[in-house]
Amino acid sequence: MKSILTLSLALASVAGATTYPLTVTDDLNRKVTLKAEPQRIVSMLPSDSETLCAIGACDKLVGVDDYSDYPQKVTTLPKMGGLYDPKIESIVALKPDLVLVSKYGKIVEALAQAGITVVAVNPETYEEVFSKTLVLGRLVNREQGAKFLVTNMRRNIARTEILTKNAVKKPTVYVEVDPTPYSIGPNSFMGVLLSKAGARNIIPASMGDFPKVDPEFIVKANPQLILGVDAKAAAARPGWGSMTAVRTGKAMALPKELDTIFSRPGPRMPQALAQLAKLIHPELFK
Picture (cartoon, rainbow, N blue to C red):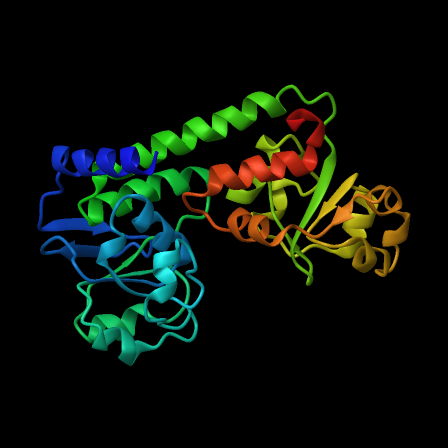
């Protein structure tokens, strides 16, 4: 299977080559021109790192952020810090011809002053995961490989959706991404996955994509399932013991792998959906 994918990506790269110089408008609304195909790339976002590898451009990476941990190859690359504590001098020393960044943090100006080409590619919504994959493909001359990946991702997501559409009951769910508490809105990429997994999010769209939530709102919403908080921690919170999810033992922390891929807007989104669906509707996967 792996050899077939490698061959497909190789053939695809020959079929549709990017023309340089290439000018794009990035996620900071900056017009950036790439004079030639990038050969030395630093990725400061785990989702971008994964996507580059998934479209056949892993060999172009010379450095990644501290949180890039997949696939295995990126774990051996030099670590360049995070969004808010980037190792600017170390990045410059790698002599990259392209640095991929988030639209958050304070990294763009310093790198631009050093004469380095910086592009912000920052997927946040469900559809942006696909559209930004195509953008990355175009930037690094792997456009056909990116299209191939997007097609496969959509196909695998549809396979899970076929199962969850048969769910007799769709439980109300509260997902906690941070104990502050922060949650996910239905229009965020995580919120869309939750819905596709056969659940009903208690957070309304009006609260935003990743809102800070009043604990009293959660108690009043009385979700049937709580994800991201284990049973002991949930029961210890004021008023939470009365919630249906806590009383019925339906409060749970996410497994480590799922916790990572569910919160990462990248190529493993179909796997995140499949694992999430199994957690919410185990009866459909017997």
